Length: 74
Image (cartoon, rainbow, N blue to C red; front, side, top):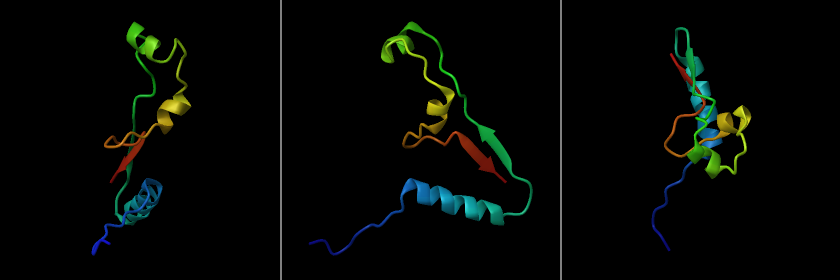
């Protein structure tokens, strides 16, 4: 049995906490959005079987280590 443990929040919980903290900062917030389209190259087309990926899917994609689609700064 381990003597120590590291406890973490879920990413959605961390996002909610970050939103609460960001609201406490003075000044106007700036929101930046990621690119919401894919290059239509043969390589990308082959990866997804020739199907187009919708903007909703691209905007919801949250890879580990990458910033979210909507990033807010103060």
